[in-house]
Image (cartoon, rainbow, N blue to C red):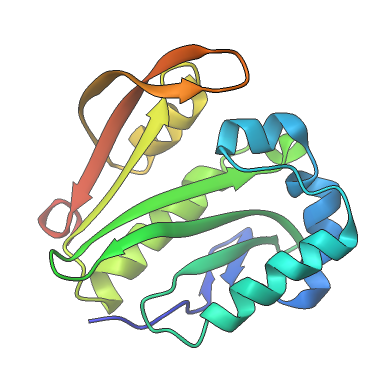
Length: 184
C-alpha cells in the first residue's frame, strides 16, 4: 500500500526526503518568509535552531511507510526551494490530502505544478492510494491554478469555512481532487 517518501526527479527539480543540510536554504527561501508561510498556513520559523528541530521531527517520521514529505530541490543550485507533502493519509479509504509551498522568488515558474504532477504520478504508479485531494483558500487563486495545471479536478467550495484568526475574516475552501483512473 505505502512506500514512504521516495526520490522523484524531473527535468528541473529533485523531490527527496529532507536532510539536516536543508535548514539554511529552507530558512532563506521559504520557511522564514511570513508571506509564504501565511499562504501555506504554517508558522514562520525565525532561527536555524527552530528549523533544525522541525527537520529532526520530519526525519524521525521517515521511518513510517505512510509518511510522505519531500524537499523540492532545484537541480541547478542543489537548493531547497519548497516542500510538497501529504498532510493527511487515510489508509482505510486510500486517500491522501496534499499540500505544497514554494519560496517567493521561485513562484510563478512552474515548480509547484511540476512537483505536484510528479507526486500524483508517483502515487498512482507506486502506492495503493486511489485519490489525492487538496484545497486552496479562496484568496490564494495562484494555488488553484497549480492544482488545475496538475490535472486535478475542481470539486466544489466550502463557503466561509476557513477562519483567519489574525484578522477575524472568513474565506472559502476550494476543493480539487484526482483519482487513479483520471491519470492511469
